[in-house]
Image (cartoon, rainbow over all chains, first blue to last red; front, top):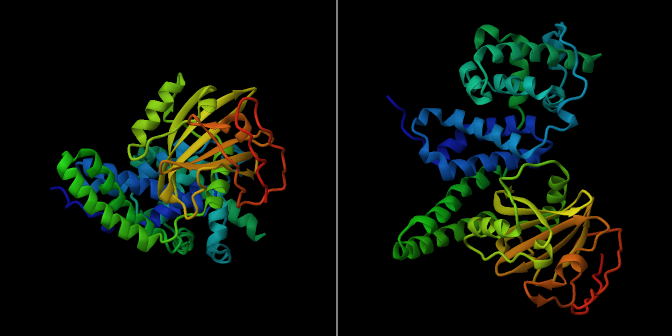
Length: 163
Length: 244
């Protein structure tokens, strides 16, 4: 049984904040993030009706946003650079408590894209593992391994920040 | 996901959830549907139905646009953000083999306004075209190679994108690595970006669409550079632009 097709406003209200946070982790600044979200919903306004299964709307939106990002932004130096090590960091919750949201985003942005994407989607808590795999167009096993490594790297970054 | 979601994950997720989108983003997004309807109806309806539905939709869209974006976007913001975008590496939707391909693509992607590509610009080797989406406004971009690794980029948006469209005489401004000339023609605002140090008016705009330009208006943007602009041979004498 397929779900009822959500109207445009329902879709915006349900997902634009999560999409914005995902976009902000990919883009250089708020303005670029807003543009990515607008491009995504603009695509939906023009092509969304072609989606046969309305239950896939959320995955479609995240996938489209990611493709828009990859299509318009080069893989420049800020996405490579020297990544932090993989060693499992012993980050205690109280250490994470001491940094604010902007610092969390700053640490996420320091991660290579392959770890940043699944990690942000994971922390949005709005997207399942299988949906993350569909959005990133990789097998679910790859999602799991990237999440594991990404978490370790993120915790290292946060831990370093607290030193 | 709960089995792999520990206390630290929960904390980081909460931090991430604290990041709020800009206050006007939702309104901008909601207006996109109406715009898409207008374009879709204008393209697909029968001619008589098209006229009626487009008129109705335009009234609604006009009301929405008026209520949400009463003042349009500032040209200065477009210049600054486009210059930054053009300085990055970006993809093209269409790789052009010649300027006719560019003209055809621009015409197909700007059905509402006739595109007037400056002949002196079109004489250069075209690279390709792409769509632009800026602050919810749809535009198009054509890119040309000037040789020696230099490029010129012509961005086009409908005049109503901007609060202060530049008018028919090119306004010149410095924008980071670029010099930008902006002008309006037949409902479309053009922004030509050439490498800083080049004079876009002298090089490409001395004759616009077969008509000679008049006095160049001053820019509303600040610039520290003051390159000289000379009248090109054979073209109408052009007054030096005022750099403010």
